[in-house]
Image (cartoon, rainbow, N blue to C red; front, side, top):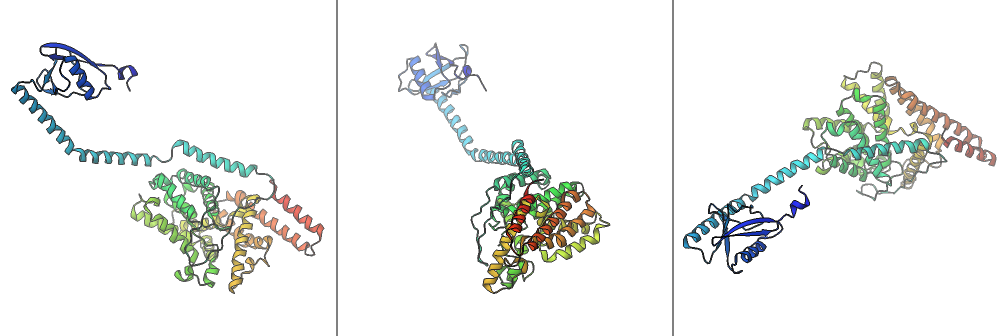
Length: 498
């Protein structure tokens, strides 16, 4: 970049006008018309005279700000066309024709030049996209995660209210209700960071802009149910990310398997309608008919996931080899289908057969581990602190009651654990924790002993808490004011951070 003085320095031109040397000064900011005016005034040539300049070698020189400066020893000759000799005119015409031919030659190359510029721009854009998130943005994601952890660890006070809302939707109708996820930008930033931190963006050559669009599309295709909403999707994905680090799976599994685990967690409940498979089958909904009563919801989640990935602007696996993508697709489908609780016993038993002699080089062993891991993450709320876990129970019961009310109105069978007239929070949780959660997590603990303190012990504490709460409920069956107050005081004590 030049200095300001050089930008505004005048240009000096020496002219030969009828055998006399003339000196003309003009600024770089003059246009060709201004320069002609200067030449005419300095050369005593009428202003309406057409003139041109000829260099020392006799070649015509363009009258514009780019004409090179000369010296008194190499004068430009001013030639008014009206007074030029026939030979001079012929030379001038020849020079003009040669310059016109040159301009035409350049004009015909404009298309080629345009193509070259577009190609170079495309290369530059590709390089910018492949750079990934800027350092500042990655740092922002890290700060968001730290802030989230700090909020969880320093939270005080009473019960946390879950802001989930519910909408009763007609089955068989494709709806896209307005989403209500107030904190979704922060959750999206965290999910982006997880993909970058695990090396998945680099491994699959993901376009970072496409990753953003994909996550926005994912968020937009979770319904605003009390429980099965985008917050649940984030919690499951965050637990998967945590287990990968806690169990040091980066050193035990391939990046392809890590990508399958994370992507299946993100997509596992897409477009969940808020009514479970039992309702779908009993009500003979469109989903149940379409999938022949075989895991209708889970099959639907898979279908929506790959409908989103089929959009070029949302395909995070666009740069993956077709054979590799086929493996990724099958892996994601297998894991999402494994979240059907009807298959819980079958999946856990398969893993138990392998856990005592587990081999990370055995594909069948790794496949069974992945199915158990996504199940653990899907139903992991009770692993979290009580002030986080209990509001999720309220959200789940609200969704259960919404379904049971509809089943009653439609004359369909009602599961006792969903009936608002029969179930309480302790009765809903005790059996689930004792007979589903603890056995599954204790089996995983055989392979990864480090999860006992962080994941298994909180489950045992939660079981004990709900059993004590159930004893209190039994004791206040007569609804004495003293026992009701005692129960409320007990719940407040439970909700206070230790």
